[in-house]
Image (cartoon, rainbow, N blue to C red):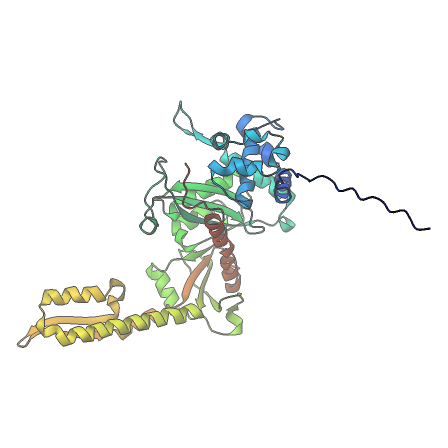
Length: 431
């Protein structure tokens, strides 16, 4: 027999509760727990762990999660947190998340004492313990000495109260004063080991002593440091070697020694000297000569695409200036000498003056202009086109190894790009 039909009951209209973000914040909270993020911050700022209710560690952890998922200003942060399950994960009440509470948690990390007017900071201790915790969970392979990258970037700011905010290298472009942010990062897993904030006028070279002190205080075993050409001088290399670290670095083209090495060395364009990269044609040659009075690995490499670009740009510039000279030559008899000099200075920049020889003199028919291109200066510049100089304190490294280690610091540029674009740290609006 057929089954009796059941009566369908239509429920009343459903009124669902407001949904709250869960998946992404839960994942990031669990990652923070594996690093003991909350307890490490609370221990240094309050002296206690496993705090019930609100704490600086919980505020800063939720803020970090916000910066990764949906960056908002401090005035909007409390509303965002309430739209997630972070209050449940932190064991706090939603009204606890206020702008002032977040700013007070920053003061717990680093602030100026009202009594002594000195900066009281727990940053070094917190960063050191977080790194040791991370490295315990993710040890280096075979306990080999670690390789770290170090770099600095200017950060524009709207603030004016901080004593470190000064005019710097980017002031003209941004019309803002700046701070300088430098970061130490692990090569093995791109983990950010530590950071510094320097006055806006500081040159990158002046930060190296602080770097060596920080590495020593963090008890990081000496390995290899990789940095850009802006930090490299004899004094800085000596500072690194004194602490037992090795170095791979770029060398500026400003010194006569560097210019001669680059001009006299021509890496062969063949498979034996090719350095495999994804987006560039690089050829490198190791030079058997001391540099900075030291016998390390001196390498000259050439970027063939950059060489063509530089040569094309120079040729176009020389051509245009030559056309300006020709035009001026045709009308020079009607001009005074002072006017001639002014016009030449307008179309002949100092950087290109070496490519031209000219003279202005008076004759019976008026002012005369004689000029010609300096082919020797152009040929000398072409010998340096697309070439760069690298140095490594370890003489056993090959040219390919030096270039690859130096190029691998490219991930650092991506870190700074992410900080400025996605994390929106520039320009800084808060104190």
